[in-house]
Amino acid sequence: MTDEIFAPHRSKTTVLTNGRVVSYAEFGDENRRQPPILYFHGYLGSRLEVGATKDIEERVLAFDRPGYGRSDLCDRPSLWVAGDHIRRALDNLGIDRTVILGVSAGAPYAAAAAAVLGDRVAGCLLVAGVGGPEVIAKAGGSAVIFTHFGRVPLLAQMYAKGFLRPAHRLGIEQHFLRQMLDTDLRGLRHPEDRDRIIQCMTVSLRTGFERGFDGPLNDLTLLANPWDFDLTSIAAPVLITHGSADRTVPPAHARWYARQLPKARLRLVAGQRHVSYVANFANELIAEARAFVEAQERVRETAAGADQVA
Image (cartoon, rainbow, N blue to C red; front, top):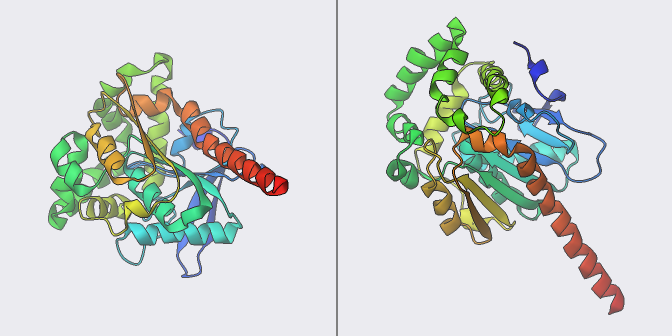
């Protein structure tokens, strides 16, 4: 398998002012004048993940999160520092405004970036997002892995050495993904896409392991413990959207975000599971992210018109 199964993309890196390397894949038309969409992948994913959506016309920058793919770890486990790395990367790229889209375990990183970037963010979309440690511990579902392993470093290391590393060395990640996603992917609108989606997730996972397993271990530590940024500081409007039948990250996570965020709108989609929801509505979710920019532009045009009348 190769990354040819993904939408056309350009993999790049940028070196931050603190010397850290951040890697990303750029999808869509790089010459589009509108602000790009920043995509934050899920647990055991990578910068390639969003490329499973075949026809991406919008400009999307999909980042390898700290320790995944070609991105360096932060100097310490920190969602705030991870968000600041995104700020520095955007400064390097000359990007003033953006939209943020975070999926599953990428949602906390997306929220942190939105908090750090402030008014540079037109809007934030949290899709099937993993919530804070208190909801992880109480809501059940597969996300409880963060509580079980993340608070006991020895268990996390055993998980990486006893499962992730052998599976990667043997090249049998696809087998495990098929087993894990069997029920979830029964909800696909287009069942014929099943094999391609699993192939895409397998390649994305292997890309995330490009330099080892620091990324997944970093996630376990960060998401199991109190976050080091204030969700209420996010100034941008937020859409929280989640499948009502999600057993990997139960809907209680979405409701938790809705209680925390001052400018949030919650939408639960009936009957949708975790991966199948993202797969079924990928293009619509990207379009909704773009709608944040369009809404902001309308507000600016209205304000400019009022100034002219005055």
